[in-house]
Length: 200
Image (cartoon, rainbow, N blue to C red; front, side, top):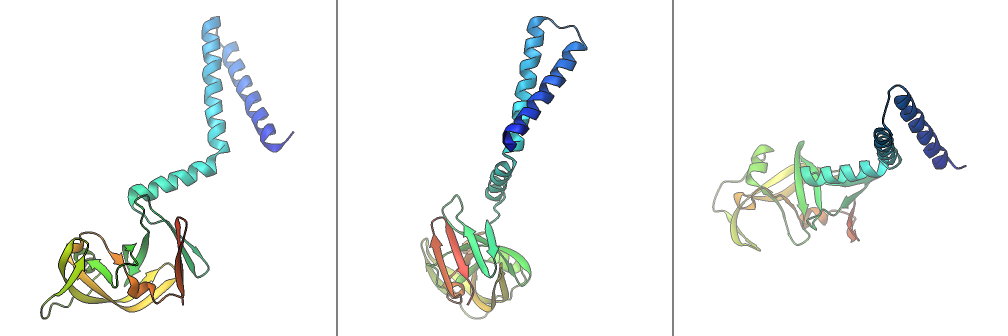
């Protein structure tokens, strides 16, 4: 008898012993006894199922949590960073901007990394307010933006120092990791539902 079959037999015996002891300790009608037996069988079947598939349930729970809370799903393998595609079809990554947590949408169509004004202020970035703002053309039209830079950007095992960025309130709550970061890497590619980033 294999391991899983032995475990199921042990659970069944324990269930029968427990149900039997409960029935012997009280006087039950036949209908009540059968109902009680059925409920105990259901309870033990659920418990056995949860125990048998605990790793899969944990994986699903973590996946749901990451989608609900907005956490990026990323895994480090040596110096390589692997990022799972989100349900919205994009790749999101968590990073540290001068030691402050920040979440980025990876966009190879963006030439420069862009940070929302609220995130930039929260991270203590110096925003260049001198002169006229620069104009950027986006999918939603032209917007005004200011220049800034990130002294140290950490994305898992990846590092970038003195990274030029643009800051604008028009970005809303979205921060975009653009090509000026991706071009510093040895390689970046998409394989199925996974993006793989390798440092230079």
